[in-house]
Image (cartoon, rainbow, N blue to C red; front, side, top):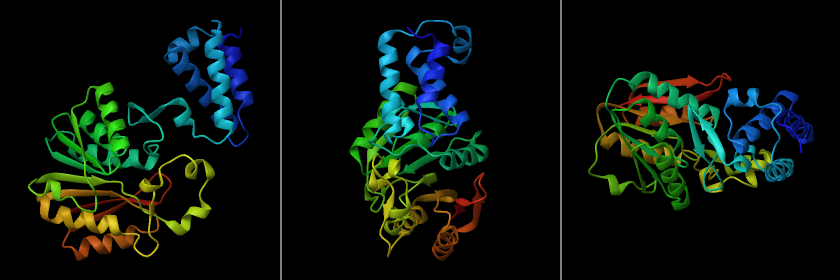
Length: 282
């Protein structure tokens, strides 16, 4: 039977070279912490602890799945977003760092207020749950057209003990919310043109839901247009609209927002220096 430290080394060494050494070590540590139910300090204190055989089998299986191209988060069943541990699987997209940056931006502006928030295309619920967690006086709703994703979002809300209402609704037709007024609407909608599919990595295409990723080549801004039109009629005066955007489409989304009468349109770059977030008021 291997010790924790030996298993850490074994897991790291077996991982594919698509990961650099530092990533291998971090991934191995994540799995050992999850499967042994350790926190970071317990990992250090229990280096010489024997890893039970059933856990060793689980770890060997996890390495094989990762090396076969399954995303690490789906194998682990967990994704970390803001400071939340979210259950994640193929029912929804894996939360991305730029989406987390969008959530930080929103919290930075709204943390001491009590907004009514709508998250359109909520997926795993990551944005909605992070906002509720860090803007505790907020009232947060999340909608999605994929029922499986809503089920996952609800499971995360229950696990995290966060009061967010998740409902079925189509981002292209939010008539079910025609009588609502919002202080803030936020969305990370599908925005990747189908033509870009051939340049994407297999682990994304083979595992993550297409409907949450792709838009028609001839109408890549359809979600931004639909949500912006809805927001124009359903934001309170000086209410805020936030989008995550394709790095090559930020200026086009800005034009759409201006044409619909929004003011104070601001594009923000992510940590990679790409135009990935937009805020507008109406």
